[in-house]
Length: 396
Image: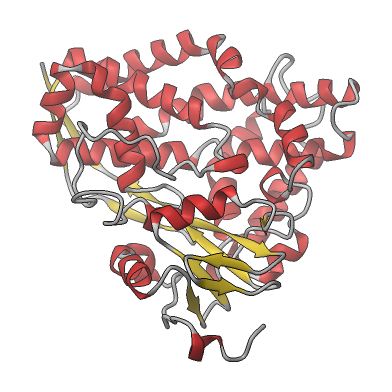
């Protein structure tokens, strides 16, 4: 580490993992973008990259900014975070991803699309009849907690705890704070379940987790890593999609003209989904370890340092987006980084898009207006989303 960083480069003295910064992050991200292409964060002993072009370049430079030494903003987790798909580098990462991601690729999703569409239609039909509902518990969580948990094939004890385990897994990837420490007992509980609860005999035949055991039998993955990859399914398949769906509902409710436009032109659905993920990235960012000096538009991050790549900041960068704080379903969003970018791009993003599309398509025929109240945010070190979202559908 260079002792003179704060003297020779831009610096920002902020705790990005404080409650206030978690609840109100965007002014901090703007400040980081304004101060420089790479900004030293002394409270975290990290560099931050927040501009859109620089974030895209950093995520593509996976041979220099590596994931194999962990992606957390604290050393305690990075020291033990080996073997999971998020913390592996090429070529191992690509080989493992082919096996793990097979169920959520287009061919795998084709087998479950009808079930997802039908569940979404039934859900929306029921919600239209109600005078009000919680958009998180009664809408955003339904598909992940019914269809996706069933696809995973976990025994009932696992399905009941998935949300709690997933939230803790992301809390652990934040700064060295109380939330990170509080997550460890829950993560140990998840590990115990994956090691001794999600056994071959306990999981549903033909399920995603059963597929891991089949892959191990075929010599495609190390049998000892099946519990780890089971955790890789549980943690990212829930909260990110749930939170993205909540953001989508909130912004459509707050912008009735956008919902009218979507109903008039359903071909805008893909835009709307991308715009929701852009304007409120469900994952704020992950860190990378620098294995050789890395130049960010004139600022050199030294070998041996660590950098946080801020997806949520890049998605609001005024250098890339006109009125980035505005939700606009006509915006053609092809290069947001809400799902990441490069070799570590979210492997479940097609499933997330399928779930959100199915909900919107069901709503178009039945919902004339969406009313949303003031959301209650979940406070998580890495995730951004709502715990509660008061909603009402006005029938078409």
